[in-house]
Length: 265
Image 1 (cartoon, one colour):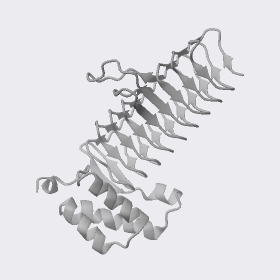
Image 2 (image 1 turned 90 degrees about the vertical axis):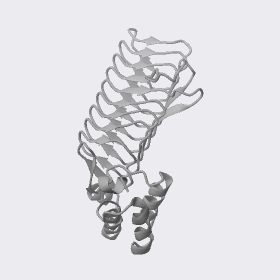
Image 3 (image 1 turned 180 degrees about the horizontal axis):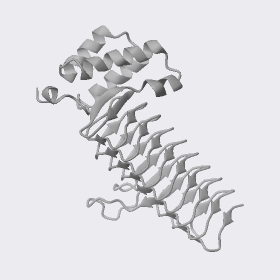
Image 4 (image 1 turned 45 degrees about the vertical axis):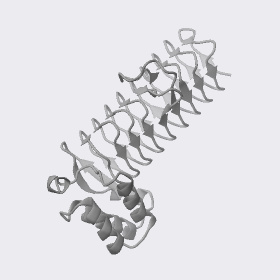
């Protein structure tokens, strides 16, 4: 069974799971699927293409699966996929994909705070925190266990890896490697995300090796290519070291916050 306010609109073709609560003035469109145990707050708009898992909570004024804000979109049918156990606060906007049959994706157990915006085709992992009024442009990736603090901006096509902390007001204009902290505008490397890594049961020796990797990348006044070579010879092999190396190579050495003199080499 589900509980729907008589003041809400639910399209007759929408698929509503068990124990869903839909509050007054919510709007549930055609071609929507909502899993069991979800709570839809007042004035929430869930538009065509939304695919929502279990036990999510949507607060007042959210717009889920909004039409993309992109001139390339010509009305194609596309989706927003949201996993389980997410908390999505007031006036969050999540746009669906600009590509037919494709999706903007939100994982599980994330906390998306008020007035934040997630653009088309972006992918957000698990256990992510997105702060108040943070903005994620189209086709971005936000890795699991990452925190975007309030008013952070992530530019289109940027990849923010896992276990990253983006401090408040920071403007991300390129790819951010795992386990790091970024701050300020223009963006600067601010250290290793040690506090959160300790919460994740990472050992002190692992954290020290991560710091050593980033001394080569950000503090040795050499190119990312040379930094990778130094890491391979200077830092013992580990899952974390390999995650850093693989991320840098995958993105062809294009990283946020590299010193200007290095990027101009």
